[in-house]
Image 1 (cartoon, one colour):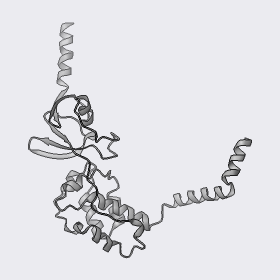
Image 2: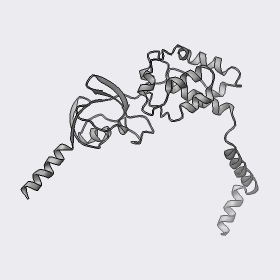
Image 3: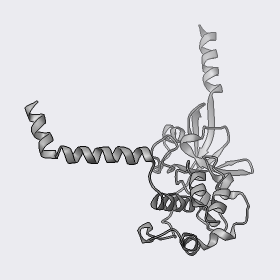
Image 4: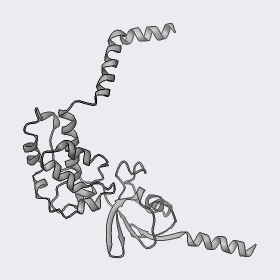
Length: 224
C-alpha cells in the first residue's frame, strides 16, 4: 500500500508544471491553459479575460522561453515548465477614425483608405504581424491587399481575426493591421449586397409582417 501511494504521489509530482506568471511563481497541472494556471495560482489582477475560447482576443500575453519571446492568447496556450508569462494590458484606443456612412460610393475608397491608413504602404515586410497572430492569419498579405484597393480579398484574409491587436503591437510602422482588416470588411459590406439567401429571407419576413400586422397576430394568439 505504501509503495502504491508513493507511486501515485510521484505521478502527481511529474505532472506538476512550474512557471512564472506576472512575476509570481506558479505550480500548475499539466494540460492547464495559462488562464487556468493564473487562477489556480492565485495571481492577482488577471482581469483581461473574456470568452476562454479564443474568440474575444482579450487575454493577451507575452511569453519568454529562454531567449525566445513570443505573444499569444492565454486561453489557447498551455502551461510549460520554466516559461515566463506576462498578461498584457488591454489594447489602447484606435488611432484611425472614420465613419463608413460618410462613404457615398466606392470610387474613392482606395484614396480614402490611404488618407486613413497612410502607413499601410510603408510595410517593411518584417513578418512581425504574421508571427504575432494567434490565429495564423497572413496579416502582412492582408495589409498589402488593402493597400492595393482589393478590400474584399483583404477582408477575407482577416476573416478569422478576433481583434486581439497583437499584430498592431508588433508592427514597427504602427500600421494597425487588425483595424485595416476591420476597415476592409466594413467597406465590403457597405458597398455590396448581402448574401442572396439572407435578402430572400428578409423579404419573406417583410411580406409576412405586411399580411399579418402585429395586432392581428396578438389577436390570433389570444384566440388560440
